[in-house]
Length: 304
Image (cartoon, rainbow, N blue to C red; front, side):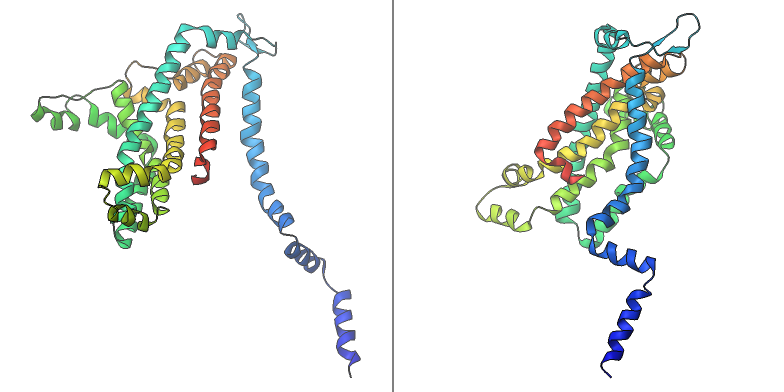
């Protein structure tokens, strides 16, 4: 009587299917399971992004035949030297970095009170409504939003109607319009990390600061901001990097101004100089590498 279950279990192990064996193996080896789960997206990321980036880096060291206009795989540093020493590229680089910094500052200043209200003042139901409201602009097309701002900022547009009673006028098209439009486009990407960071700040710390006699601004400066810096930097990564590489907005509302993205677009299309375009594209890549390296030291990348 006692040998029957043993025999049955032995028979079950002998007839165990390969799928069952694989399932048991994976359940016992979490790292193998995680590796198989991530292998497909990591392979796609490596093929599409890293391989394309490597091709871009290589193309920057090639040249274009002046007669045929064809790209030649002749190794040269001429494109890199032209980009680093040319006054045009230096001016456009400074302009692009300045625009990206201003957009980031504007977004942070606007995002802080909104995120604070969402995290510390609003009720749970209102929080959910506000999160949806912040995300709603992302559902609209990029071009629709930019052209909407073009209409708002045009002469006779809504901006002029609002400014006229105060003796002002619409900023029109130019760098101010570019900064306003980009700040609007990337604002949700700044609000959400700051909102998530504020949710991690315990309410008990705010209450303790108030009990100790600290005023509102002292509490914000001494308690909230030190804990919020990683979240602010995480949000700034989005606005800064997206502004650094944008070229469509400045084409629509920027007037005659150019950013680095415009130079890349022009050399890829009209000028048909892919190596020079690749060399120009290395500038924002290098800037972002430095920026991300600095941000990593603050722990901001943990908030992404």
